[in-house]
Image (cartoon, rainbow, N blue to C red; front, side, top):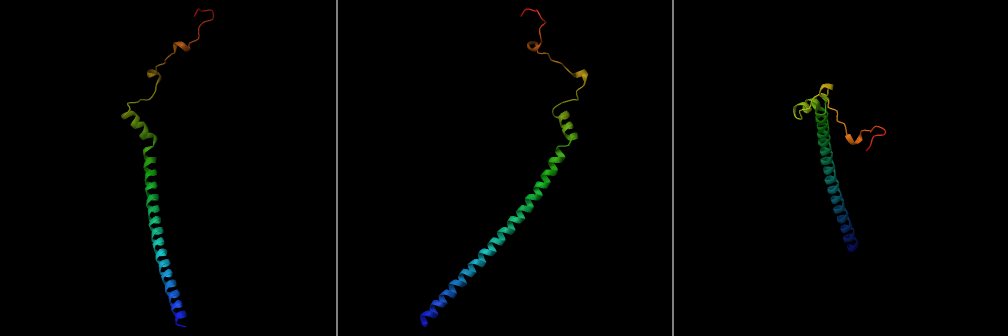
Length: 98
């Protein structure tokens, strides 16, 4: 009878240790999930901020101002248009010698 009681006591202790370990793992995983959710919220906020900055930088007025100021570009008009003709691509008159 004593051996049966010792065996049952050992089984109860082992079961208690498994239960404690399971509860510890559960708390640890819950904390990791919470940290991941907080990180996801932070990253989502960063994404929204960067998206708003990208949209602000890509406005047509800003692009045009940057082109004028930094690249010294100007609007095309017929007065400043220069036409270039490729002599190799011009058709020759019929009967003309090559």
